[in-house]
Image (tube, rainbow, N blue to C red):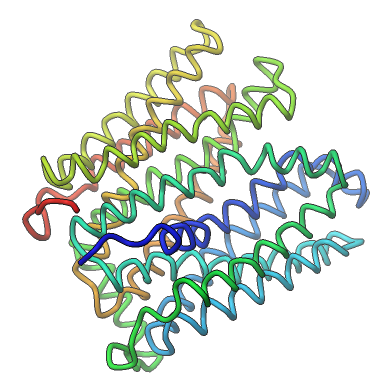
Length: 395
């Protein structure tokens, strides 16, 4: 099977990145939004981010199996329509409840986009080819957390915070058009699954009890949860400890894209050479090393913080595509449902570890170091001991 065309790859990458984009683009503008709506900034941050993550996590459990039954195309397009409507609601919101309504609709739509990007990849590829494709998708979607805070700061400065939501409306509509023209339906009618609610619930429990899915899924969820904690807490550390402005924070995150890019390029090649479990364990070990190095970073200043963060990010970049491919490969006939459960575990870990990093007692830097170390350790302990299938050469 040939490698995916660039346009196809970019479209799936953009779908995968939509949730991160719709959250991180708002981060620099949260103080301005709080003043505009006359509400407390901490309250706004907790509500706008926490509610989004909760709805996003739960919605994935529905849209995945729904797409296994109806096909990917109608669910993706409906999700992007809901996302665009939610973004429009946010753009015109004059109160916190209305703003949060928009965020809920955004989360519902982004869940469909994210889950079904992975499912569409699994529809067409498997094994090392799937790992290679997911690695390339991760490289592209790394630009979302890396560049979206910088983009958000620039848009807000030029046109105000409501323009951020207008930008997201345009993003949703553009992605819908790209999906129709470039990707289309990836799940033919003969491969669709008709399930009752009871059968659906039983299928989820079967996945939860299947080590082929759960071990790599937990490893991936652990490092991605730690990544969300890093992006949620690092701005506090950079601004309070090192005096960064919002623009400086955006530039810092933009630089991290190149680290994840390098890891995404290395992961499929190393998987073909040494096998996915070995690469996953290597990535988890590097994530642990990054967390431990962060504990020592205060004495090394900004350079120490950046180096420790880079080590963690490279390890995360190895674990994420490798673990995702391992978790989805054995379940081609229920790729939507498996991808949905994987996404739920990732967002649940993100909510848990982000909350820990922002609420644990002591300095934020120490709390972040503990969370990154814990995420890497859980990934190392959860990772599979052997391949689902022997590695073959990546195209």
